[in-house]
Amino acid sequence: MHILVVDDDQAVRDSLARSLQYSGYEVTTANDGVDALARLSSLRPDAVIMDVMMPRLDGLETTRSLRASGNDVPILVLTARDAVGDRVDGLDAGADDYMAKPFSLEELMARLRALTRRGRPAGDEPGSEVLGFADLTLDLQTREVIRAGRRISLTRTEFALLQTFLENPRRVLERSWLLNEVWGFDFPTTANSLEVYIGYLRRKTEGEGEARLIHTVRGIGYVLRETPP
Image (tube, rainbow, N blue to C red; front, side):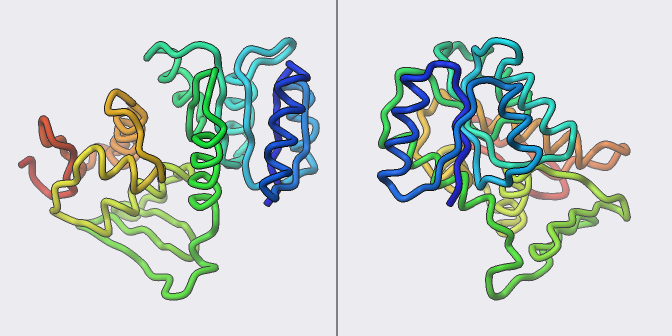
């Protein structure tokens, strides 16, 4: 498993690299966003750990650039800022997960494992199939998502979240269960990663005026069904 660590602080960069290598990961480092983009032009790591505040090109702009170019490598963003708005900015930029400094190394490793699990192509696993609900289909092998004949492009995290809904149609899914199922870690109940990605899925699956399929169940979570609960 190959991880790219991007941080302008050499002490943080080296410490993360040592910890990851000790845990069995292959590690490449970059000292800012420009360096990271240069390395990613030839590297295909399994995940990227990206600091936000960096000179020349910060972590959010680097993430946006990668997503705009079609690179969907899983990205875990690290930042010293932990306001809700900052977390939303990170997720809106295209990051798959967000951690505030200082962070627990154990938690970082758990989230990294979750990211790399989501990043594995489903077609490599036995029993790949097509999931469907109403006029929406998701192919686990080709990773194609189609609604009413329209192909929808999803990030890895969006794909994993939609897959979870399609595997549990008409079942009310609690926020905490979804966070643990998709992100693979017991997030704080205040984490708004889920709400952000629900918004992404709704915009993409309703982009041509299609009826809403992912509904909010107030105070509980969400449900995939044809009509509001």
